[in-house]
Image (cartoon, rainbow, N blue to C red; front, side):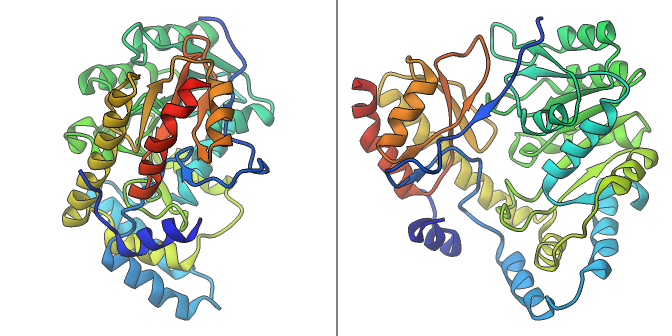
Length: 367
């Protein structure tokens, strides 16, 4: 992280007004000659952690010579109480990516992993490297996850697990809560359903849009959450799953390491902090509005997002356009999808980074 981004993170500065296909997510080559001045290829929250989380993490540094085992049960208990669960229905992980990767790999022993495309493929590609078979279902014409097609593919392939990212990454679109709930109930009768809710806290109605109630009801649904995105703690790596007791037990059997003390301490004081979440949500909405404005100024189509990113149609082959932007010091992300050859994902970032993106985009579009 460069000095500009680090300074903004510390200050929390406010922003100024179906065929199975090989899937991959690509980022700009980090060895590229030009220095990256706008890191828009990742999904971060430069608003940063809450004041309480910063203070707790700093205090925890005083005890870093010691393992953090004792900090895990209190955090598990807090999450369970807030979400109406039993403590043994909560499993901590190093960011939700760890749990998503390990569980996808484990469940794939019983059948393929079924997911929408494009979606957050990183954990699924990890599973594929461990021998898993992946089955991709294309989005609908309106760019939404095709739940009926996903359910049909799961049945036809005797899936080991179905993965749903909601809001979807990279589209940022939120599924209809009732439709998703019905889908999860149906599909979870035959295989576990993982619902990745990395950005759910900034959805219009998090309680309604979350599938946490299905976990409480005993369905084989695994809700994955992280403190990396909305809570601004990407560098502290704390996440959790909420699931049936046996699924939590499976995750615990797969994780070889313990969590870090600063992250656990920070998570324990900020989870569910409504005042902080309101501020973070406003900040991220401001970031998205700025990206929308940049797109409109350059005649680019985009999807309205509920995540910390915006899916943008650059009108050019996306891999080449990614390289063009990189040559100008801007990093964006490209998702492999046969129906989205001209789309890029632009992540929320600090105001100077978005300003820089705005300044070089017209030049990139002329190349």
